[in-house]
Length: 151
Image (tube, one colour):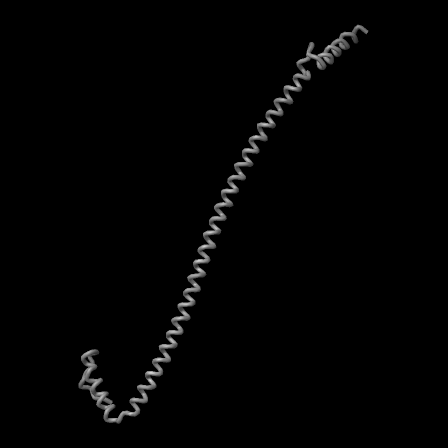
């Protein structure tokens, strides 16, 4: 029985120290546990702050990228609108040019028809004289031999 008294006494002292600040109480006192919890809470709070700051930085960066993308999209839309306007102008100018060519062609046809009618009404001798006059003026302008016979 004496052998059991010493271990029982040590067990009582150890267990009693856990519940109070007495002998061997530094092992797991309530103050010790409270200090450890407070330290863990401080670490967790600091980590939360760091994560929050990182999240805010990432959100700010994402907003900046979104703003840049929106600006680029706006510029692209403006350029597309300008290109479309230029294309519309080019189409309009082409249509106007085509109309002008058609009008000139019609006018030229009318002039040629009138010329043909006038030439048809001229006597043959007048036409020969006209051809000779034209041929005589050609060597001065284009270097054609004036002595070549007329057909």
